[in-house]
Length: 258
Image (tube, rainbow, N blue to C red; front, side, top):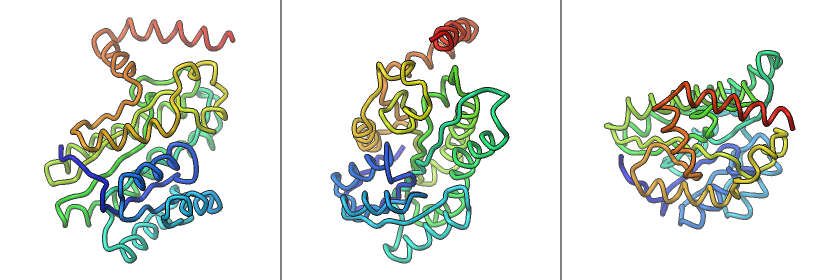
């Protein structure tokens, strides 16, 4: 996998107005990016981060393909190319099958279709140049499931599968694809999810996660795992799936009893 240096690059970050996205914008700016485009559905937050990093703010709803296409077209018109596209926007809905259809559909649109829309628009130009980088923010839940949030876990798993497919299909043609899979991160989303007791103990700051991304892009891994224990859990799941399921059942009981 081709190493990526952010210096002198044009970077787009969706969901860039807060949380991991805002920290990614700051990290790429510190790493010497030529331009950082802060894309967010919240235009006020996008402008605040863009002003901080000397970037450009764009109001984007990533569940609308036309918005994603316009974001990419405007960036290419202004900057000539997109070198690194961070498809980072996310949303948290808990519950299981009883969660509303809206929760399931919105999770699908934000966590899966936003990546699809981005790939449709940005891949042709990256393939033509023979280089480019797509970073999708997934979650440890995409690898390990989630004991309290089926809409989140299921759509994150689908996102991971799609990013793997992109890497399989286009990695040999110069397009670097990586999946960011953190566990707990101290963002508004973690607080909103209501599972802070479950994930807060080992939670990282968003800036720590962003630094891991910059470092990982200089290496050659598809999976970016800011929490090292996630790799250990993933190996356990692969080597003894039934035992892992029993462990997750115990964890769910503990979480639900709190």
